[in-house]
Length: 292
Ligand code: G1P
Image (cartoon, rainbow, N blue to C red; front, side, top):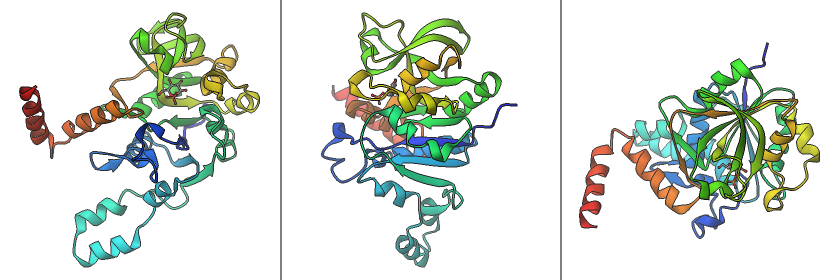
């Protein structure tokens, strides 16, 4: 029987240079979308998918992430003494049980593959999920939950995939498609960030993965690839033949918080998704459009 996917890795070591100066003294994963940090959405998604262990691969200047997933006693005491029960709940009611969060550091920014490899001792010999918090997905059923359901039937390495315009292939891991049936795509190869003219398709990996633990042996000796970095895409590509790679065409819409315009778009989309603010935000947007 296949082992259950119980653990998730959040690679959060990036410098966030695209968001300077906002990220000068604050991790980019702590930037809010509406009223919660980007990393909080990733955490909620993993939890809703049944994940029990949350592993953060951090770097220097990321302690705000650790503080976010902990009690804030002074604030909680003040809120409690003022009978602010709803606000108090927002600071703590979602905290996971003690011992279910681990942190490890990637001392040098050597790439996504290297960041995932840094979690090897915390994962051990079982399949695990990876969420890149920059990629936010709005969907009825959490994207990772959809993938775990599929993984339980097929196993293998898996990533969420979607088509992108051909001129954008240089920003993504791209599938060389062997077979496509419904939501499930089998790849015969993967290429990290190919030029549009060389891209084997326009089907792109977005930041949700389920990986077999065998990936760690491959990452151990993985040579630098695109951008001079150790790439997760290259390691999954090496495994094809022994471990199949599946792309999963998820239900939902993805927002790219890795760039400023995508981040603004995500704020609008997630605000419109909130019953408590939808109407007012829509009204404001109509006013902007009518002025244009
Ligand atoms: C990473 C992966 C890439 C994937 C992308 C999704 O790239 O290396 O394969 O398509 O995430 O967002 P990055 O955006 O970190 O450069």
